[in-house]
Image (cartoon, rainbow, N blue to C red; front, side):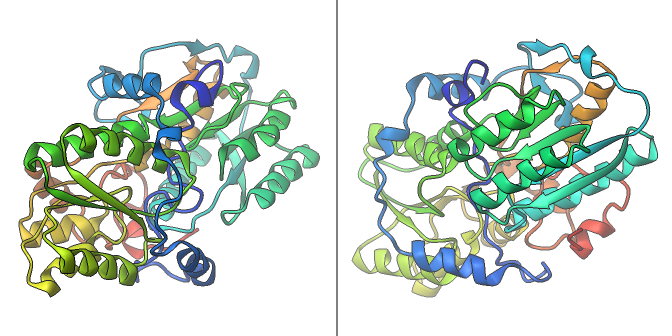
Length: 412
């Protein structure tokens, strides 16, 4: 997103304000922030969408991400967390450094299984770079999904004056932009990943392709399998989070073009609310498809059809293991879109390059490929023994502690 991160990829807010890809319903995760998650769910559950999706639709960004779905990625496919789409490269020779360097990480949260999976992977990657003498330590502050807390966290790091580099996963876009700019003004390298901000001052911005790509993948899949006049229930986690809104803006456009009736609901990722929504819709007529902007709660949606004795829908979920397993069990027609969880490795690997004075992509766009029916068995086998809240494309199989650390789900 050079020039303006918002302007080019319209802020890839990936795992959203607080749950891009799930809320903490996985019982294998210890001590989830239940009170906070519950409050979010209560505020958003069953709320009919108040946002006009047209305000989130950007034709230029839509077209760019559509093209990037079939782009050629530079680098080794066996290391997708290091791949990128060819583009502007940043000279980092000014940041070359001798000896281990300290990283300071301002994290939006670890409040859902997607972020927890990534956080575990990131810490195992950190161990590798500490052992090799690249990074001395990574001081981390968790904003717990709060803009004000994260602003204070970034300002704390700046005032502390003891950071050799900053890694920032923003809680939200506009609110975090001034704080990111202040970090850039220190003269230390800044890496933004997962969600974007409205400045290009960072050395690199790391993210998978984006929300429009997700929306295109999923809506095209459903549209190809459904007919004009068929009904799709869209289950959305939260309003106002750009990557989620982009997913729906793209999907809604494609459904309209294909004459598919789509009704959307905000659920707060609450399985009880999801079941209630599906049950109410089935009571008024047939539902042929289910679309989700994140996979947490997908199992509850399928169970609602089973409870009603209704034909199972064509469906899109996510690469969370609970969905892949339920998909395999039921044999439904489905697709698992991916917001590549392996991106949590990339900021630390980018620091390794930056401290060596090597070029890095100014905008580091990572692969984002859905899991298809043909691939599902492969990912189920590869992730056998992983908890339901684990993400199949986590990309940490070559890191120390695999698979035990991820199976035990011990959050650092």
